[in-house]
Length: 202
Image (cartoon, rainbow, N blue to C red; front, side, top):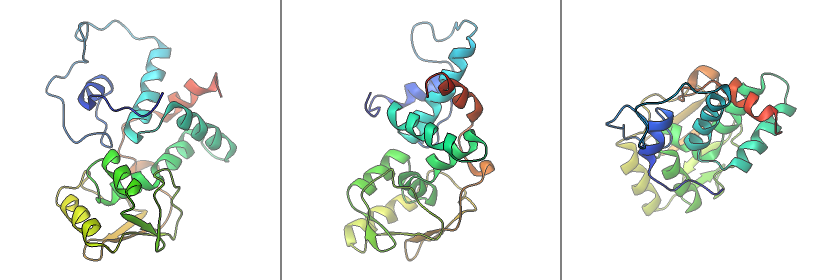
């Protein structure tokens, strides 16, 4: 299944707050659909599926991509769930979103795809590019690119810049100083349930 392009608030109502997907908040607190208000007790599978869907929709990755990230996280020593979150958080589109250059992750992906962003002075237009410590991420030195990001900076998606990033709003240049720590992940998620969900498939 390709990337989700449907109504985002329906997803937020079903899964809860997804800071990367949209900045709007749903007016109704219950899930969408005819039976949204009278939900039955969910099975363990349904709970795990929901956590997995949170990751997918928040970071805007496809099922295949997420499965690939889970397999990659398994090969690394340490907690698989934490490594999985770090891999997703260190994507270029998410890093730009966390620096405040874009209001949502889909908006950040568009900035990358349209060639408005450079990494270490070179244009990178691959949203899934893995940012590494020491890399410099900047807005392309072009009037259109700078205006776009300056407008976005007036209304950043999240208020706090994570400890592993720094960003100069005047020069529109940011730097990755390390790998994100668990407490700086903005999404409310139980990553262990996601790993359990995939343990049967991957």
